[in-house]
Image: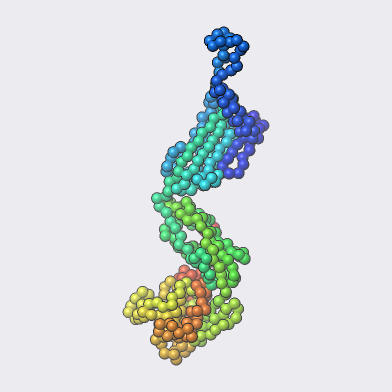
Length: 419
C-alpha cells in the first residue's frame, strides 16, 4: 500500500483496505482457475511434443506473507480475559473478521504499520469464535488464514441474588437489593456492570453496605406507577481476583400505589396514608421499655399470613414461642415485625406498649377473620410499603438492618457508591 492510500475500518470485527480486498484478492482467484484448466493455446498443426507443441502452464508465485492467529486454531480452553491477535510477517493485513457462535462480530484495532490486529471487545467465557484473516506481501500477492477456538469457563464464579423479583409490583419504599455469594473486592467493576433505570426517569445511586451487599435507590421514595429495570451485565466481570460473574439479564418491576404508615408509639396509633389520603387509623401495641421498637423508616420485606415467632431466634432466650402469629410483615432482618396479636387483652391496644419490639394490631387466632385490624392492615399492604416509627424511645434503626436505607441522608448514601 502506498503512503497516501487510505485505510477503511468499519464497525464490528471486519477490517479491510479499500480497493485491495475486492480488486486484488479477487483477481488471483480467477487467474488460478485459468491456470488449472490445462494450459495455453495450441498452434495450428502443432503435434504433441513437437517444436510447435503446447506451451507449458505457468503458476503464480506464492505470497511470502505469513499470518499467525492467537488463540490457535482448535484451542478449547483459550483465556477469555485475553484479546484475539492476528499478526503477519513479510506483509500487511488487508482484512480481519472475528465472529462469535451467534455471528456477532468482535471489534478490533489495526496497528499503524498494518502488521497486527487486536480485538477490543471482550470475549465471553465458554464461547466459540471464528477468525478469518487476509494479507498481502510487498508484491500484492494475497495470503489468508482461518482459525476456530473456544474460550474456557471460569473455575470460580459469583452471582448476585436480587430483590424484588422480575414482574413484581411493590411499594414506593422498595430498593433494588443485591446480595453476592462471594466477597467483592473490585466494587467499581461490579457496580459499573449493573444499571438501574426508571420510567419516569429519576437519579438512582448504588450504595455498598459491605463487600457482599449493594443496593440502589432514588433520593426520595419512588413515584407510584414507576417502572424500574435492573440490568445485570456481570458475566465475566472480575469481582475479585480469579472470581468472575455469570449473570447477564434484565429484571423489571412496577411501583404500585403509594402507601406510607406512621406508627406513633406515644399515642399508640398506626395511621395509614394511601396516595396522599389517610385511609385508616388503628390502635396498636409497641415495644415495652425493656424492648423498645426501633425508630425510623422501615420497609416491609416479607409477608406471612401466619408464622411462628420464637424468642430464641432473636437472642431473647425462652421468653416466648408463638406458633401461629397471624398477618406478620417483616420490618427488619433482626426480627422486628408488624403483625396481628390475639393473645393480648383488647384494652391494651392503643393504651400500652408491652411487646418485645414488634408493633401489634388486634387480631384473632388463625387469622381467618377479615374484619380484624390485623387482617385489614395486612390486606392493604404489599412488600415495599413503608412503616415509619416515631416516639418509640429508641434510636433509629441501622440502615442495613432490613431494606431500610431511607434512614441514611442522600449525601451519605451517595458516599457509599463505588463510582
